[in-house]
Length: 87
Image 1 (cartoon, rainbow, N blue to C red):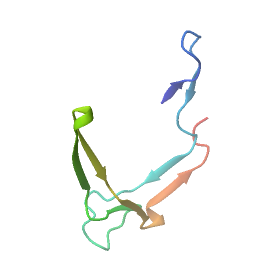
Image 2: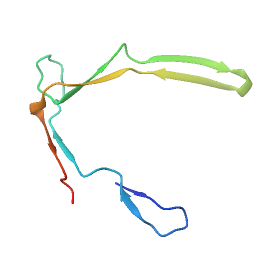
Image 3: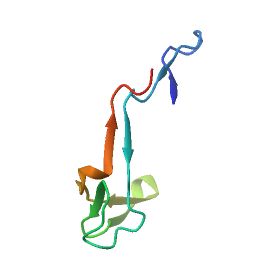
Image 4: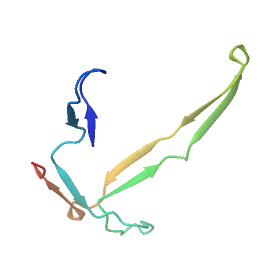
C-alpha cells in the first residue's frame, strides 16, 4: 500500500505503508486440536464484555466493548521471515 506523504494541494509523493520484510506463515484453518501445527494462535479471554448506557444529555445510547486477546507463538517451524525481500 501507498500513502500520501505531502500536504493537500501539493504534488503527490507516495511512500510505502509497509516495510520491506515478508513473513511466510502457515496458519491452521481450524485449530481445534491442542496438537495443531500452526505459527500462531489467538486466545480470547471470556468473550467480549459489552456495557450499554443511555446519555440523556446527548440524547444518545453509548456502547462500550472490551475484548482481551492474546497471540501466542505455537511453532516456529511454521513460519519464515524474509528480510529485505522488497527492493
